[in-house]
Image (cartoon, rainbow, N blue to C red):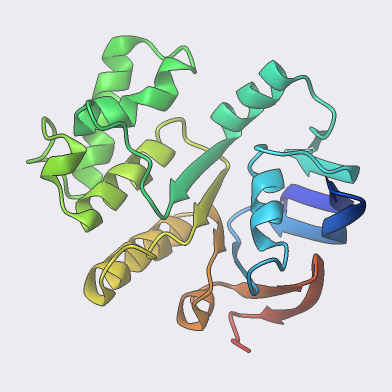
Length: 231
């Protein structure tokens, strides 16, 4: 299998007063193409720090982050942003949609930074919205949508540039149980179609849907459960 992302002895430290906090502490972890990984742990365990580094929103203080075979740890900010926009898609708990834009316009946003011609961006956005069951909501704004519909827009937006990896941070955290299951089923479908998924969650039932669950504690990997076996 092809490794699409890999942390190599990656640590992230933050100064806090006179002390140094090790949010991530010497982590080695590889992600294969088409894999589905859940990252779990209590608050302060390092799971969000790991996701930020994997998403090129932060950098390791020491060690390496290899993305698509390239060490992106020391890239300049503009180059790192380009890697993030081209290779990664994001789904957040709070959806992070732009309030004054329509469904179609929200989905188009990542393509504006990827030099996709406007007509192609519009066609791709319509196709993604339709795939997410939003064909009758194209001109609606976020405040006219349910939470589940907003998250579907967020997933469509995350796929706009055909990313190598889809990262999700508590994607069902703001949804009721029924809608949450629908979103998780949608993520399952994307993975079954070959998309690499990395999801941060506090819910063991969500983690159990993944191929493996990485349990974090104090910035380190406590253990890894293969085939989604929960703790």
